[in-house]
Image (cartoon, rainbow, N blue to C red; front, side):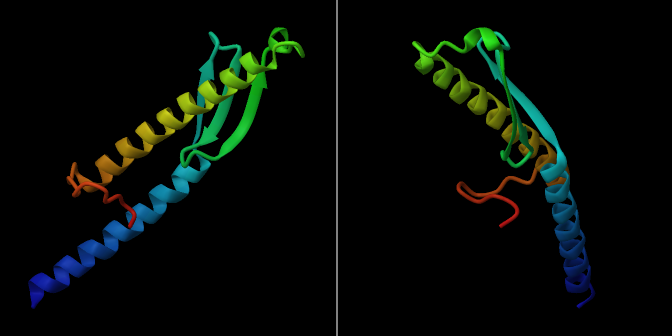
Length: 107
């Protein structure tokens, strides 16, 4: 019975740590860029868009597709960086615990 109580306490502690990590990810900002830094975006650790910065020399009304592609590429870069940071933080929290395919924490 004592072992079960210890497991429950550990599970509660892990849940609190995960909640704290989620709050930290919401306030963490990650920058991604494209076009040699001519387009920059900032997202939260959860991938929510916060800012877009575009070099004025890219604004050409006759060739808007390039700008659109660069924004998408910058978003992808920022999201990839945010996901990597989130995975790294989660790994620290779980001690490298490997979850079955398709499972993510928090559940």
